[in-house]
Image (cartoon, rainbow, N blue to C red; front, side):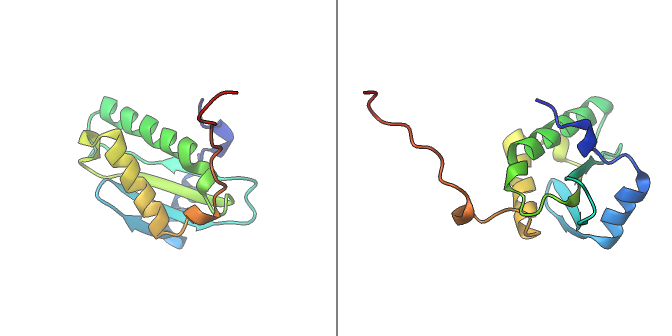
Length: 131
């Protein structure tokens, strides 16, 4: 399943606005920037990869991994009407998916983007014995 195209930021002004006017946190592998905007119809996502991160195949792999993380954890965002910019840092190409995901989640929680675990609905519990 892909992240829908309508959720992608394509305008440089949107990137700049999120980076300049929003809040950002830097971790070991990613820099996460966000800006709330009630006029947005839905979450707008951008992944910016520079040549400092690595060769083209490394940058493509990082983009795929970050989009997968956003798909996986997007439902945990407190306010979906925002710009969300993720910038992988040099050295992130050698990180495993789990390390990258843990760092992304840590920065998202530091920015206050994730719902509290006690506010989430309990996962369904499967019966131990099938009747």
